[in-house]
Structures are given as C-alpha cells and as structure tokens.
Image (tube, rainbow, N blue to C red; front, side, top):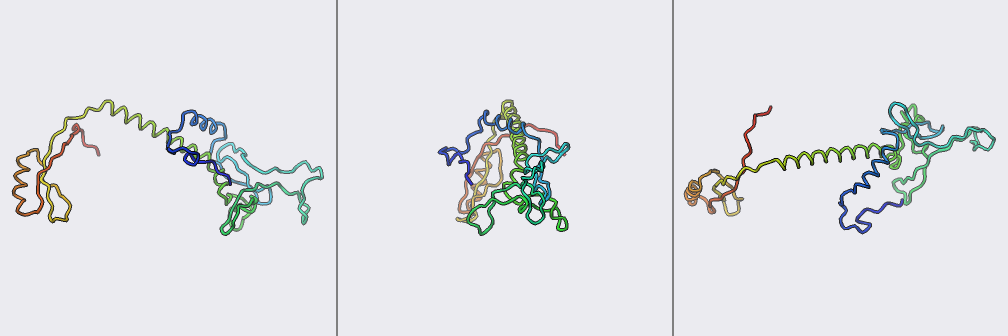
Length: 227
C-alpha cells in the first residue's frame, strides 16, 4: 500500500518541526465538517455487510455498500437462491504467511456479535477498518491534548514572568569516599564553611578521600501546609 512520506523521508532533516498554524486549521476544519465521533461498525453478514455509523443520538450512516433496490431485472443474483446480492465493502488485507495484500470482502472480515449470532456485525477485523472507525476520535483526543498542553505552557510562562528568584545561600558539606572505588558521599550540610573544613580535617584519618564542598541553594517562600 503506498504510504505518505514522513518528513524525514521527504528530505526534512528535522522531523519534529512544529505544526504550522495553517495546517492545524486545515485539520480542525476537516474534523468539524464530518459527523462527530464515536463511530462503530454495524450490519448483517450477507445483508449489506459492514456499515460504519455514528455511535450516539441521531445515528448517521457514514460508509456502506450500495444496495440494489430498483428490481429492474439486472441485479446480481445468487445462483443458488436467486436472491439479490447486496454490494459489499472490500478492504485491503494481508494475513500471516501471505506475500501480498489482497482485497477481502467486509463479509469475510466481519466480527459477529456472538457465536450463536455470528451474522450480526459488531466490528471488522482489519487495520484499515479499525482506522476508519477510530480516526475521528483519535484526532479529536489529540487536538484536545494539544489545547490542554498549550494552556499549561501559557500558565507556566505567566508564572515564570512573575516569579522572583530568591538570592542563593551557599551551603557547605563534607565529601568523602569510604574506599578508593566507592562513590563520593556528601554529609552534614551547614552554612558554616569553617565547620565543614573542621569536619573534613577530623575525617582524613578515617577515609582515603575527604574534602569540603559547597553548593548554592535557593529557598522558596513559606506557605501553608496542604493536605
């Protein structure tokens, strides 16, 4: 099946390029022009096959095979029963062990409601059919997530503009290794440089590596304890 090239495959060295506002507007307009999701497959095996419909109040048919109803005598008839044969959707499909994809009828791919009612269709076992069913819902949820992330970014940017960085406080500690191969540990943080240096002097007889270290610490404002 021909695939649309990805940005990288099309020669774009930066496949994470931001979505252009014009392209996003086009996507939103296309989504707004179709019936709202969720959608689902219904139908009757041998009686029209799978039909894609909206799954909420005011059901609308979205995709279904043609149904011959004019009875002009030129309909396709079943040779065994002389009954009029309904049209049937076909889906590109490839099964395990097959070299190439084939076009298979919706009737053959249909998922029955139960073992004792296999002809009442509740789904179609095919990746394209699944995408047709879920694509509008996927797009709706992804765009909602985009909107939520943008709102959160705007909120954080507003907080960053009003935040005041409290001047840093230098904190001292005593760094040592218990053995030559052990990782460095830092103990006893203090605001006193002399205290950290004195502690390092006391530890030099016990550990092979000991020295004072420092870091800059920023403290926020005191706030009420939340439950």
